[in-house]
Length: 306
Ligand code: SF4
Image (cartoon, rainbow, N blue to C red):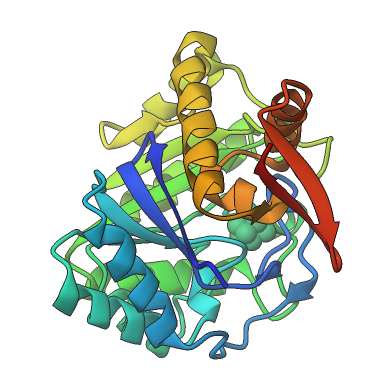
């Protein structure tokens, strides 16, 4: 299995080499805005999913190709801290490569000492926090039944005390779900006490899991940013013009990879970082143009250069 994808240009991290260590779709949440799709295995139990040597070997191989890679980022098809080998993998990479390592996490398991110990190895941790009230938390993140807001905040607080490197906290804002002024005010107070290095506001810019998950306008996000103080920034792009080069970059990455080996649709999504909807649309165009073709093998649909 291919665990490494990209490097993909990321607004937050530069050229990021993604490392997927979770099968779709193991997660402790089932967020209404999730771009991967609905959670099939809602879990808080950690386990070893793959041989860590295979995963780290793929990362080291990718880094040795000499491509521009600013950061190696653990993320992928679910919640990466559910993988109990996360710390082993980060430690191994830190011994072998000089590129910083980041982990994008939903932050729901930080109350677990083992998770915090694993994350302590990373150079940047990017947790999420979308709600500070129980009802809003349940509506937006649809968490595992054993999780509640108090537990999440407790985990974040302890982690901040123990971890002296960078924490960038992402808040996904959804219209009429967590954009109520009272919730935002309460959230700003709690987040201020967490003392994270950056607060990054996002909204839905790709097709979400639930169509009812509506985006906020740029002006609204900018106004909300004011509540969170100088460490806050808006990280989603509303500018169509700036999306065009990413699309061209995506086509290059796909064609370059297809020249070496066939890819399934899911591989394509991982390699490009595009949503399922965007990837489908672009693949249709490339197929129509006769640049690529598809065929079914077993249960999977593969793409190759035509
Ligand atoms: S935490 Fe991430 S992977 Fe899990 S459901 Fe939410 S958005 Fe999807």
